[in-house]
Image (cartoon, rainbow, N blue to C red):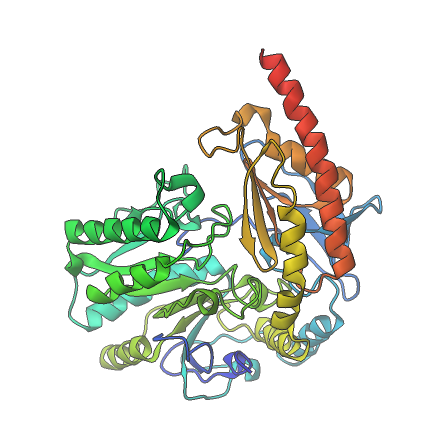
Length: 471
């Protein structure tokens, strides 16, 4: 199984652990952002949790006790909601998978905690394979913070002390730092590959990709290739608005990176484990990364766990350098936490046993076609996505240059209408994101589509009212 050995890996010289994962694809970003993820407590049955809103400027944090069963959450009044966001892109197996509760309970009764420093490891994270290395973290953000340190360490080991800058995409999760004095000067930004929004008149997707690759090369040459360490990218941009790459984008970008010996880091925190209809987003788009970040669906959201996957070429240099220095000075108290690893291991078994990737491939045409059928709505500018992930952007006149005024709260109004009809979606300004649990049924997909339609009609009427008031 592609990831089954990940959690049974052997630590060597640090928390860098051996694992057999993804590495047939590995030649083988979310950097230091403060994640305001849902906090949760669970009981043994029904998974009781406390939900807090993913706070955005116009949102007031509200909390209420609820039960999470399958793809549904229930508030304290017993109101049932279809969770069309899978928690926060993560509860792929729904909220009441007994096998995961049992795995956590069994591990808590055996070894609830031990650290992974100084060559210690717990049984759930042990086992050697021949393929590559893994560094465990507790989240996608920690994984990407670790990526920065690992890449710097790697270049120091190779005697390249100036090769330290990172390039990320505009509008990606790694640049969402408003108010935090971030990103730091070593992080540069290149064009967002959003064809609908940024293509020139008459420019094809392939021509758009060529222009973006040319711009990336110009940025590299301007800064100096000897200063650029890595390019960080989500295979499909998630929190930035569900933005699939244009045709030939990664083919052209990877050629530039290879030309200037720049590492490619794939942020698979949202895309990995079947979301796009492939085990990894890298599989879908032909990406051959040097390093990969994973989290979220790694444990189906049941326990905090993330990881950095390293290609042999990276791992060998890091291990050799740490032997030379005598230690590897990076780690977290909860890296390779035995309970998190036990749950993640069971998740990976379930993915294989239930053919989750094939299930997504089977369901996604119904899901995608059902939402895309609303494209003719006068308030929808774009609908984009793949697999069980789709984004709808509200604009006026079908134009990316005619957004609705933020004070109208069009996206928030739509989200409130969805909730009124029993469905939770993500509202990011005028962009609506649907990312349901991967266990969703065809009937539940039809329910999503039905509620979407009701909310859309109400929102269309609301926009008409706002336009008339403006006159």
